[in-house]
Structure formats: structure tokens, C-alpha cells
Length: 601
Image (tube, rainbow, N blue to C red; front, top):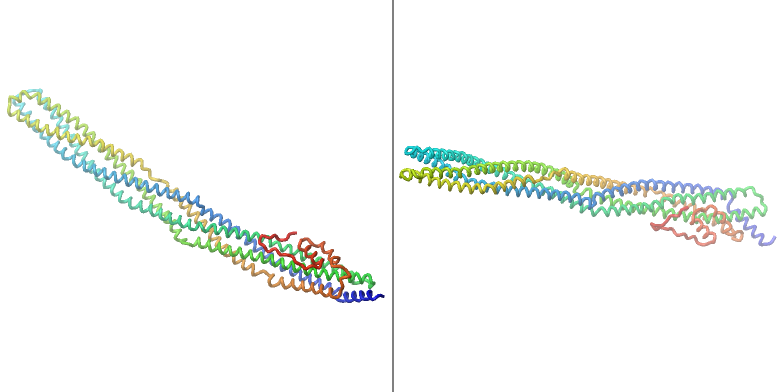
């Protein structure tokens, strides 16, 4: 036997004595048990993280939906339209109030003017009536004188006509006096009523409208201020969605590490089966050489498995770090969302509710005042209509008065013409006639002044007809129900937003607490790393012990590892295999970028 052959046998003997078949089987069984515990640890971590993620995703989705609702509430165009309606309503009420108050002021001026004019009518009427009675007395004396000296039937008949007209005029003038006196009293009462309405409504309606507008402006200002916070909340929500997307990718790593561990376990199982075949094998040279080659194969596989587990550990740690970091980022965003939602919801919350209640209350009071104003408008219109009717009645009396005055003048002239020749022969009769004529001249003057008043009545009647018509045109806004509906709608929007803000605040706080619990419950930091290091150490020990007691000439690493490629399903496994087979340093980059893709099957 040559020296080389003897040395090879010695080396093979030393190699085969390093481990017994039972030692290697036990070592791989223990490693498999530890791999199983690793798998359980990994499964627990990822199942818990997956469960927590589902809860987080659910919460994030609710928050996102709530933000949409809140954002819709602060929708500028929609709110602007509602506020525009309220402001328009305010302006309409203000305009109606101003018009009504202006009409009242103008009507009061008119009524005061009417009262003053009527005051100056009574003196001419009184003079006219007195002169008329004096004329009747003088005419009776004149007629008596004529009847004594002359029994002319014509003059007697003329006297009766004159006396009849005097009596008719007396009756009409009394009616005029009574009508104008009643009109003057009505004008004074109406003026007093208008004054009362003016003093009552100018104060209350104006104050109420100002209160409504002031409160609406305050709420609108608050919404504009809060509106700027909503985009910030939305951005935080979107960032949370990005982080959740990264969590989804990395949570799938549990399936990947499970596959890698199963590949290692499958390798160990197959090795143990092959190893057991050598248990009862013969001691001939061929079997001993095959067994030695198998030990070298175990050596190389142990080294490769250690490299695979080192890489798996790195990937597992990287995946967990990314998951944890994203959980923490979501937590940070949740905290900001919680604080912002809480701030929006709590800021002067009670004051805002009170403002809405006050607005509704003020609108109801304003509505009642406007209903009262509408009734007052009808009453005032009715009173003006009554004055109009009384003026028209007085006008009718003056028309009759003018007609009777003209007829009286005609009858007196006929009477004078009839007795003129007889009066020329009687000085006493001439004096009586002259007295009657002088008095008649005064009556004509009185009648003329009353005619002037009559001429002034027509434009007065025309003015009051215009006033009555204008009061009829006053259309008091009856859209109070619509405005209350708009305010209630705004309040409902705000209330709904308040509920969503509160819900977001509470959900964010709960999610933040759950995230902290979820991170603290990860077993990897206490268990996974230690166990996997033990496994790697054991595999490296097998690799080292077999390596220092053997020579590479017996078989190549590539030959020993080639069969393992059948188990691989992932790119990193192939890369590590190739690097170990070629004796190169294992160097596989871990993609920690948030947008990086995880390795799939």
C-alpha cells in the first residue's frame, strides 16, 4: 500500500470518527425542533401583527371616511351657498323693515299734515254756517217786509226756494263739519297707532336682525378658521395609508420565512434518511468512501444552511423593522389626527351650540315680530282705507255743497231781480236788501275758501290711495321655515362633523395605544434572534469540525450542494447557494426602502 493511499485512509477514518451517525441525526433533529420553535415564534409575531394590522386598517379606513365627511362639511362652495341664503334672507328682512319704517314715517308725516289742514277747515265752515243762519234770518225779515207791502206770489215763491237751499246747505255743511271732525280724530288716532308701531318695530326688528347676522358671522368665521385644519388631517390620513401599504407588503414575509425554514427542514430530513442507510452498511472501501463523501456533503450543507439562516434572520429583522417603523409612523399620524380632531371639536364647542340655539331663537322671535308686523301692516292699511273713505265722503259732501251754493246764488239773484223795482220805492226795503246782499257776498267768499279746500282734498285722496296701494304691495318674507331649515341643516352638518371628529379622536387614541402594545408584544427581540443564532452556531460547528479534519480533494462543494437547488423557491436562496458553492463571501443586500418590494414565490 502506497503512502498516499494510507494517508487518505487515515483522513477518512478521522473524518468518520468526528461524528457518529447518531450524533448527526440528533443534531439535525434538535436543529429542526429549534426551527419549529422559530416558526412558531414567527407565526405568533406575524399573526398578532396581522390581527393588529387588520384592526389598524379598519380604524384607518373609518378615519379616512370620517375625514371625507368632515371635509364635505367644510366644503366652501356648499357652505358659502347656505350662508349666502342666510345673508340674503337677512338683507331682504332688513330691506322690508326699512321700507316699512319709511312708509310709516311718510304716512305719519302725511297724517300730521292732514290733521293740520283739517284744523284750518273748521273756522271757515263755522263762519259759513253762522253767515248762512244770519242770511236765513235777514231773508225772513226781508220777506216779511215785502209781504206786508206787497202780496206778490212770485217773490214769495222765490223766497221759499232760497230758504230751501239755505236749509240744504246748512245740513250739508253740518255733515261736512261732522265728517271732517271725525276724519281729524281718525287721523290723530291713526297717527298715534303708526307712532306706536314705529317705536316698537324699529328697535326690536333691527336688534333681532343684527343679532342673527352677528351670530351667523361668528359661526362662519369659526368654520373658515377650522377649514384650514382639514387638509392637514387629510394629509396625515394619506400618509397613514402609505405606511399601511408598506405593512401589507412586509406582513407577507411570514410565508416566506416559513418556506425557507421548511426547505432547511426538508434538507435535514432527507439527509437523516440517507445517513441511516450507512448505519448497517459494510465496511468495504467503497462504502467507507461514500460515507466520507456524505460527511463532507453534510459539512457543506451545514455551512450553506447557516448562511441561509443568517440571511433569513436579516430579512426577518428587516421586515419587522419596516413593519414596526410603519406602525410607529401610523401611530405618529394617528396622534396628530387625534390632537387636531380634538382641538377642532373642543374649541368653543359649547359656545357654538349656544350660538346655533340663539340663532334659531332669534329667528323665531324675528318671525313672530314679522308676523306681528304683517298684521300691523294690514291694520294700518285698514285704517288708511278708512281715512280714504272718509276723505272721499267729505269730498262728496263738498261736491253737493258746491252745487247747492251755486243754486243758492242763482235763486238769490232771481229773488233780488224780482223785488228790485219794488225796493226802489222803499228806503227801508233797500237797506234790508243791501244787508242781505252784503251777507251773501261774505257767504260767497266763505264758499270760495271752502272750494279751495275741496280742491286740495283730491290730491290728498290721491296720496292716501298711493299709501294704501304701497302697503298692499309690502310682502313680508314668509321664508322663515326655509331659513330655520338651513340653520338646522348647518347645525346637523356641524353635529355630524362633531361626531366624526370625536370618533376620529377616540379611534386615533385607541389605535395609538394598540400600536404600542403590538410593538411591545413582538417576541423576535427576546426569542427569535437568540434561537436562530444557536442554530447557526450549531451548523457552523458541524461545518467547522468536518472541515478541519478533511481535505477538499475528496469532493467539491458544488457537487455536495447541487441537490439542494431542488428545494429552493426564492431568488435569495439561489444567490446564497451560488456564493457558498463558489467559496465566495455571502453578501445579499436587504432592501429597507419603504417602497421596496418583498421577495415573493
